[in-house]
Length: 624
Image 1 (spheres, helix red, strand yellow):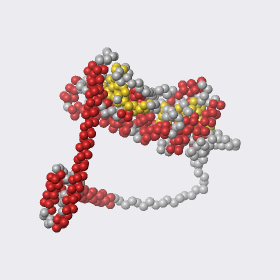
Image 2: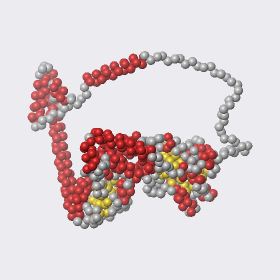
Image 3: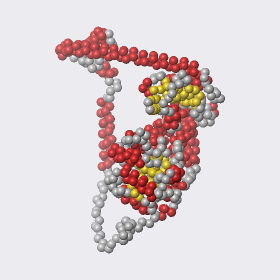
Image 4: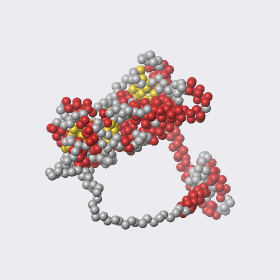
């Protein structure tokens, strides 16, 4: 049975709940649905599963977009209620008739709901009975088919000698006669196609039965055409001029030493210490503290594109019909009206490197939010869909919580403990380089930083981080290679607490999401040290693989953790953002899959090339 049914506005005002049900829900399934599904533009899904201690619920919902109402039904997952979708549709229709925006209490709706529920349950019972009847008839038909096949086998064995001795002209007649006899004897008008009692069938029957089969003559013609084409290609290729023979030049030996510098290593002093000067980039200001200015070129291009779309639409629809529809407005938007615009929008998102699965879910969510809404005057469907998609993208990319790391660092400093950040990700995405960029940005805000070299797997990883530490003139904690990274990180945090460091940046080994031993070691590091921030470092170049990477990382961190409340990814650092031009879809895919915000964007090779994600700029680029 139903656990609860609620009707509330998009603003969160509850208008009506079923008092008869009145079951106390375990946990907070409605709040979780709103937070993780409706607000995250996942409303295109059919249902949502919520697990609570001692209960497992399934939630289904529907919208009345014109009135701005949400209808949610909650029931136990193991029940598999078939009438919930129909009941929600009936409730939406009946409640829309009595809805008044000024009214907040609807006690009269209890009797209406009681009647609607009885009707829905009665229809579901009728459907169950009809299904059972259909199963019984199907079983009877299958039994009769088996009897027909057995009788056909017996008839074939009896008439085997007659078939061999008979002439060719009588084969068709005998076979058709046997077929009719078997059909009349069993009271059925069908015969199994594989029955040997059928015998040889005439050419007309063969033609009618093989209409769906592939014609071999067509295949031969296609092969002949393909052979002619290949011959022409070969003939064209034979006319090409022969290539000139390349002669090897004699090498000139010169005893004088080369003037170019071959040794690019840093100078060493007599004591063996490297004299590394602080780089010139340290004098510059990090791009994290600069506000990005959006040029108006994208707006003018967008207006030009909308103008082109408007012209093509008026040509196809006709001047009078489009003019009349734009003035009068459309009564209610239907799914068929939205499909062409959503299809074009999905293709546009995919060309900007958004994963196909994410683009499809976004279009489904936008369709669910627009279906049934009245189209205003002087507006087109394509512009309405684009505006709804823009709102959805801004809502997804805007962080749901504070991502002010500087404030969190000062809060941890007051508690006299270091703020710990762990950088995780796949191989070769630039974790160590961007860790150094974050360290440089923190140094500009007069925060004491210490690096922890916990990549004890890759050769040269410790030396790479040591070079960054010397150039930035900050301490580094290292234990070499083939050590347990979780223990190294723990000792680094203890050392930071002793020497008064404010932030510990933990570098980890790159690992593929399917490498279970390395993922287990990462889960152990996070569980043992309980960092304040877990940053996933990902490339902005990836497309569909971004979804797989983040889903697998979160899944492994949850499954392999020994804690009842495992830590997952808290934020995203996007690297190589300066190499993708307008292919910015990886940011959307990663945020949509994980729910974690993009906290940093790497856009170059120097320490200053780190900036914040400009949500408006990303959305305009995606929809351009």
